[in-house]
Amino acid sequence: MDQKMREPDRRTQGEAPERAPLAPEERRRMIRAALLRPMNVVVPVIGVGIFATTLLWWMPLLTAITYTALVFLSYRDTAFRERVLRGRIARPAPGSPGPESARVPPERRVRWLARGETRQRVEAALGVYRKVVTAIEESGDVTRAVLDDAVPKLHAVAERMVDVAHRREKAAEALEDLRSRVTAPNPGRDEDLSHLEEELGAADAEISGMVDGLLSLRARVVRISIESEGAARAAAGDLNKALDEINLRLEALETTLSSPDEH
Image (cartoon, rainbow, N blue to C red):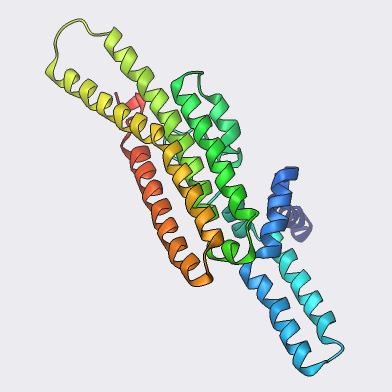
């Protein structure tokens, strides 16, 4: 009896990953990423090499079966899916709209912002971000291979940028509310207001410079696509470092930008 009662729990746990079906665009991205995953592409390359030297009739069949299995496993791999679709962000940022927002594309989450300069700047930056990702995905095999780590970092930039924008708007609302309550000079309160203004200025500066930063990254991707393999790998290393720096700055803003509750 106890065993029968426990069986539904095991089935429920096993079916959990299927509760959030992928959108058509996400499925296409996952299939493309699984097909071009370096560890998967190595299999047909090795298989063709062995067949060319041995002419074993069963080698192409074995290679095709192995490659298909690896692609299928990659598509079903939860960690690989998160890396391709969301970047390496595994936690919601403090003050973000909620845990469910981690599964919502940044292009949709930005629409939750009030219409204004912040939203316009973030939407413009997301437009460039999507072009950078598309440029990588539609480039040659060598470019995709050397920029394999860049795509999840780009997704992380987009997610964090939207998080910072949401926190910026909440902090701006808090600042406006605090100013409306001012009735007399208060050194402690004035210092808090000044600190909050500095945080807003830092967030505005980062968001404003995001479009130019992403356009620069897009130019680097184009350059990498026409370089030799050795030069492309070196340039890809520089691009990854630039992405790491952007993510670090955005993460720092997520941490330091005060929430309304703190004031």
